[in-house]
Picture 1 (cartoon, helix red, strand yellow):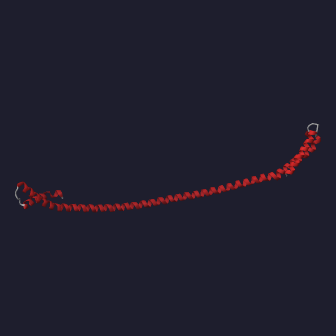
Picture 2 (tube, rainbow, N blue to C red):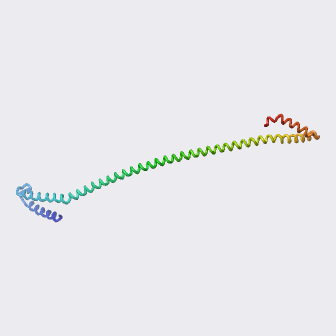
Length: 192
């Protein structure tokens, strides 16, 4: 192919030299050279047409078709990837929603368990407090009852000692005990 182009270039150079050698004016307008010009015009353009048609056009067509098929393949692949990504996103969102609902369910169940445990412990604590309060109240009542008898004994002994120290004479302890008992009986309702 290159040899053909080189030969055409040499032929045109020789032909141009002859045409410049004519002294009749412009050779293109001279009817004597029209047949040669038409011959070379047909030869050059048909050669150029054949070169373009057989060499360059298939390469251009192949390149365009390969680009088109590559673009179509890339678009198809992108569409598949997009659909796959959307599917994965839906699955991911579904998993998240399921996880949230399960977590909420677990939290609610645990909250109910804790509320029940707290209520049971609160009842147990209140019952223990009530038992302790009842025991303490009973103990206080018992202490009041026993303390009145021991108070009367202590009061009668202390009173006898005070009277003895103040008056400097021995006092009848049974009389002092009777007076203290009488005072305690009168005021017993205040303290019990």
